[in-house]
Image (cartoon, rainbow, N blue to C red; front, side, top):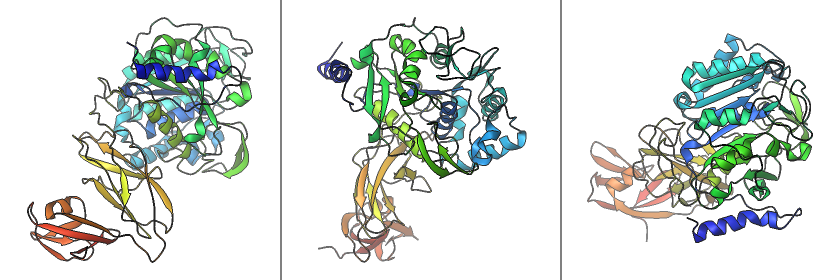
Length: 510
């Protein structure tokens, strides 16, 4: 049934098409999404990035498809040439990469245990000399080493197939299957998009070989990123059923180097087959876009390089955290996925939020606010989420807490004076799975030597639970000042004034 709201959404989505070729770029829509079925795939640098997203955000992506990519963090330790051109990924290299996964699990990336619940699709041509089978063998081994069972991992190698995205239909301007040439999309008598979707979602409805032009939408990508390697606009395909309010799935399709819209037009968006299957199977396809960046950047292990081919960042052009959740391109894509999935009626379905592992899904916290600004700190608070065992706090996209926060506030410290920051919060279920991030709350620290006092009157129990006080030998003490507040219980009520990050004094508020 089409509601008034869904009709408005549909009208908004059709607006750019109705305006003709000189259409206006619109905001990315918020749709009804089953977040337990969010998946990602990509070719070449897009394959590397899909792999990175799957490890870094394993609680978000239930399926990962890698077309001619390489292992997680390969170029974080070796020159990028050791991760492509048919290079063998040694046991020692895999061990070094695994150490990153082990050390970052649950902090810089999601819990690596969730990867074992993902559905993995891998593809490479045996005539691919750009990346080639050897790096892809490393990808397969890395997934096996992280617990992905054979039943969940499909690895396809095709003869007479070069470095291309494979389809089973002809499209104008495409290259031959055995030739690694622009636009790197070929009729190889093999439907790669169908194979990946079938791995992720099971049996599919027949595809629509003529998806409606009105379903392709150019959106403002700059709202999610200021990264030098990303274009100001991206594209999304929204089937009519999804625009009308049906609960749909989201798939992120990542182009390779020299495959963005600025280089090859809409070929990757329209000629790969993703949208043909998406149209009849209620799948929204997000096509984020890179741009050519001719500025030279210092990379993790490959020296100083420009990103002249508009590749996704699997080398470290835009920071040493490129493969972590805080990596700027990863954050941008995750933010797009979260926004797409934020429509009224979105659900976590039967699989939960976390790689199809049957996890407990929680909503994102609400009511996030900042207060108590000092020159070096800020208190962030939020409304409790039923069923949460704790919370994580993210400052400017990076995790700010070292241990799970049990209260509904957090005193963030070590900040710069007179500086604006943005915080988001996630709720964490008892099984360790995180919710989506909350809407951001911003705050600006005070200039050095000034502070903004916040007074709170509550029971000693509440002060302790919120981190404003602590208990020693049955007596409650205000944090920082160590002033005696009396017995730790539900009935003693005390007024505390915050005079610094996690520093409180008793009874001095007017």
